[in-house]
Amino acid sequence: MSDHRSKMSPFNDTEQRSSTAKRKKKNKWFRKKMQYLQGNGYVAGQHKYNHHKVGSGHDQIPHQNGASTKGSPPCTSTQNKGLPYQASTASASHCSSRLSASTHSMPSLTVTVFNQDSHEKPKEPVNPTSATTGPSPSASSSHKPTASSAGIPTKYLAIDCEMVGAGPKGSISQLARCSVVSYEGDVVYDKFIKPTMPITDYRTRWSGIRRSDLANATPYSEARKEILKLINGKVVIGHAIHNDFKVLNYSHANALTRDTSRIPLLNQRAGFPEYQCASLKRLTKAIFNRDIQTGRRGHSSVEDARASMALYKVVEEEWERSLACKSHTR
Image (tube, rainbow, N blue to C red; front, top):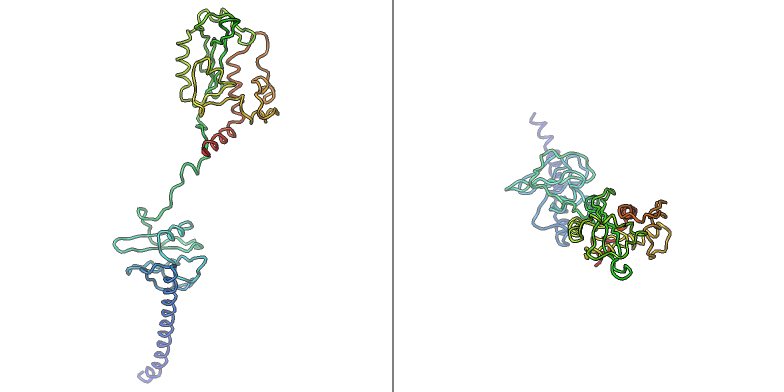
């Protein structure tokens, strides 16, 4: 046995020396490579790692402060394959896009990073309280920008008023009926209103108002309070709506006003010149092929309000998007 050991020892010594020399050579090359990377700002100088060849079956994760994690391949960079990876918050977040990312333990710090191309699950539990996470998506990126409260029908109302004349030759317009409908076209408000001035022209051909309609009508001051309370803070739609606000002696916020007589988008759909002030009757006929304001009984404010709402809904998405873009550019 002693002879056998003496014969084998030179071979073992030679193999051990050869292995030691190779390891020293590799460590020397690794230190030079690390010095080069640190000198060029690729790797922070305060961290030291053991070198591992990418793709080896006996890889270990680079360890720090004596702590290590075995069994998972190191995260590799697409630009520096085979080079040690900088274990930082940014790199951990980058690697976590494919697989779970980093594990921190206190007081000693353990950083576990995984290969982007690996589908192997981590063998050690990840601490949910300290795992690196990216910023949560904001509301502006998950939702399209609009000036209005899209998807909230209660925020929208359409209004139409019918006027009679007072003063010489009925030249002074007075409110005699007001109708307000919801986004779905349901009647929210519809009342005959008694003007504050004596009526000299009922304008029945257009207004549809007759003397009998105003016999027990709501006084103007009372009706005005009811209407303004109803439309306050709402997106109000109407055709030539400035006339309705004028007879109410009221000014609604521009950002909450939608006038269907001044929407180039509607004119385009109807085939009219883009900036032509088309009548409600013409637009409704051209877009819906429906007749309104017909017969000798005059206009119906409920019918007109519903027509305005229907026209608005045709171009609602495009219109609100364009308004939102204009508000952002200001």
